[in-house]
Image 1 (tube, helix red, strand yellow):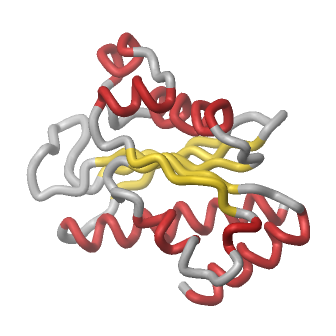
Image 2: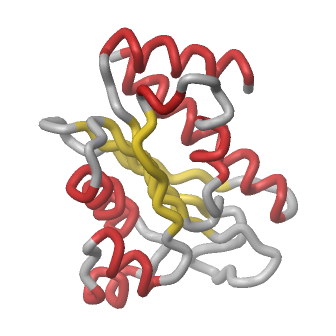
Length: 158
């Protein structure tokens, strides 16, 4: 993880990129990892922990209708979250995460371990990805953090 974070820090500085996050099931863990790097204030703007639907609506401007129609753990919501981060911050790159970490809360359509990600960049199409992780709550969250960070690195490397 340390090498991944160092790569993100170097590329963000080289590109003069600014990163911000919107996290639900990871509860701010991605932001915590990014800010564990000394000097991250140069390239990290803020993290939104939008665990509740109300927080997604209030902090990121997500439509209640989108959440109602698709559920908080969906492609549509996570895409809107990533785009909301760009609109509500001074970031040039965003990542958003919403998922079912467990042990409860899963369904047939969205079993425990289902996590949606989106990475946004000003002036570019938002990238969305769904993962289905195995393991307990801690394991699902840890895997989600890694995927989120790898996606940021991919964005910075493009």
